[in-house]
Image (tube, rainbow, N blue to C red):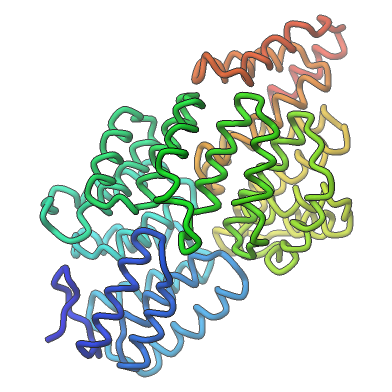
Length: 455
């Protein structure tokens, strides 16, 4: 019987196909290379190779792109129709089906149970870890890996990859010292592990260590900036955040025009980073010129208002910047009209609508509405998806709207809140300085702040 390197049976595989499959798994693990080509080679060599098809479906489903998801449905349909699956492979198929139905938490729970039965199934661990990320579940980002890690030993293949995932979960749970130590241990085992590298970048971002972050990115640039590195844009985005924290707008724009958008990437994760960075520059008073126009055009293929609301929210940023009100309205209507039939639809209705309305209001200068919408959305935004670093744009916009709307009490409170986490942040210190510079305001403004706080 042919098995993977962790010892799991591979139904329908030939030896050559299994080799190509392992190459695809290795590329997926470090987000480097071309796993899809290797999977196509495996399928060509062994058309009934179930796990090759299932990994391809995982990758397509987790892309959160309408075209890729349609392809994932086709792949999974072919698996369902004509392939013999063992229990482990059938469990993979069931989890993929739930993602395609928009039931991300149910998929995560299915892979929780899968991991308890198959603690060495690194494909399932990584797919589940990404599902936890897409639904913003910090605890399970950590605990999915913690539940299986005692089974692993340091001499097992992919042990360092499992450590890298655990490091990111630790970071998202605020255990920064352990997160950095575990990520560095993972990188000692596999220096090209983009996920572990980015876990350290997240630690430095959350601790306000901008200079350390710049040094980290520069020192390891050969490991993360290659053309075959799927995380090239996201890691460059982390470097840009460090420069932005220090008020170095020229360096931020250089990264945007270089590693982030020079290639005009149509990958939705790259476009999320681009939108978020331009929005932060806008909040900082930096003129980004016509960069919004190109980015908005790239969003047209992905912003359907249905598949994944976190993406649509970032598309709205680009459409606002490019002065495309019809597309903004299309996505506003999609969020408002989302029913509750699936978990994704509930994300849109419960969180997406407030976030989009809040960002639109901020852009249009209606800061009272922006504060009300964003203050209401932020406690539940974690279940909407993304990392703490990505979702910080909500609080940044909220604080900026409070300042621009003259809501001194709200602005000062938010500044104190941010400084409690990053007391030396120039951005946060600037918020507090500006808040204290506001006039105290009259009874009407104080009344509005009480209404917003109660919303």
